[in-house]
Image (tube, rainbow, N blue to C red; front, top):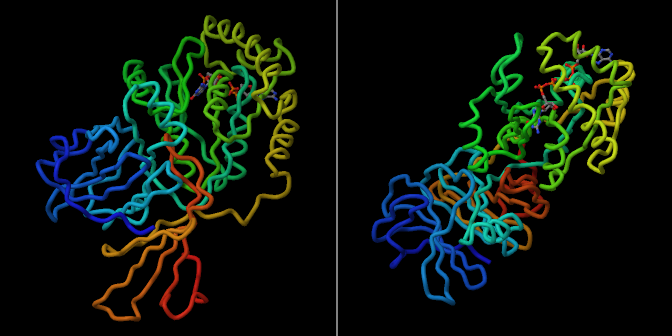
Length: 402
Ligand SMILES: Nc1nc2c(ncn2[C@@H]2O[C@H](COP(=O)(O)OP(=O)(O)O)[C@@H](O)[C@H]2O)c(=O)[nH]1
Ligand SMILES: Nc1ncnc2c1ncn2[C@@H]1O[C@H](COP(=O)(O)OP(=O)(O)O)[C@@H](O)[C@H]1O
């Protein structure tokens, strides 16, 4: 299938209320998915414009303005659109930065289908495309004072280029040494509640009387930096994450006894007496749930810190010396402004010939989409990218882009 053609929308509904004012005419792409035509477009001139979405329902012969979820691509100088698997449209942005040129408009993925039912409207969702895979995140849970933070710090200190911490949002007050943006994003309840409503959180829970939550951006930012994400979240949060099918390793840290847990909490000296008692009361239920539920893949006893840390490293496959062959974070894709796009099986071919530079300038960029993972509300990962120079001569010139 070839690139969806640039076209002129003759009769859209008074512009794209979800993206920009299209006025009476605009240019964009159209992609047919069953009896729906997805019109994705910008303004009718050479200037940069934002991307709006409108759907023409061919069976009902009417235009529909969908609810658009997720952050959309930045204003651009045009785009190409290619339908993948009947459930998402790949958008290749012209004139964008290398790390911002591939996007997916999900039109019938599992999440979008669910949202259509919940909202009772047409729904589409934007997800940014990213090269390469992210390693499975590591979710660490356990009662307050058991040693989660201590173990995570040890891991980050020993393997600084390998792990990144998912910085949660919380409505609780910072402790003496805690820094905003490093340990937590300390936030107002009303602000956090609005962000939760706007779908910015992967999970959230009320813990010890405060609101805590993991933003989608917190996890994606770690993966973008090429590191493996560590989450320190409570049992409710871990359960929400399993329900959202986030592929992660779930580890529960257990104290040797309630008495020892109390001793550690008091020795830490960061909570008031009232807060300590609340945390201890909650600990019993957390331990019960952590041990009995089928959320956790591993339960680690933190009686002896060194032993527990070694066991943690073992189950993460880090029991040797620090690995030296850590994958660097993948670079973006450098696309020229002018290119044409086509599809062959699970590969998207981007023809980057620059006519004014002659035959020698021919380059074909191949996006292998056979192993895509993730998607809204996070990034779409697993894009594999190859460049073929002077592709008309031979395919033997294939090499991986660095
Ligand atoms: N669900 C959820 N729980 C979180 C998050 N961040 C922290 N928590 C949990 O909230 C609880 C309280 O954390 P905190 O106030 O830092 O106290 P601490 O556990 O005693 O260090 C702990 O069980 C954390 O695992 C989050 O983003 N989501
Ligand atoms: N195995 C252990 N033995 C003794 N003290 C520990 C052990 N693990 C952690 N601690 C101490 O217990 C306190 C609570 O640990 P922390 O990492 O803050 O717990 P959490 O993040 O689970 O609330 C800290 O003062 C820490 O130094």
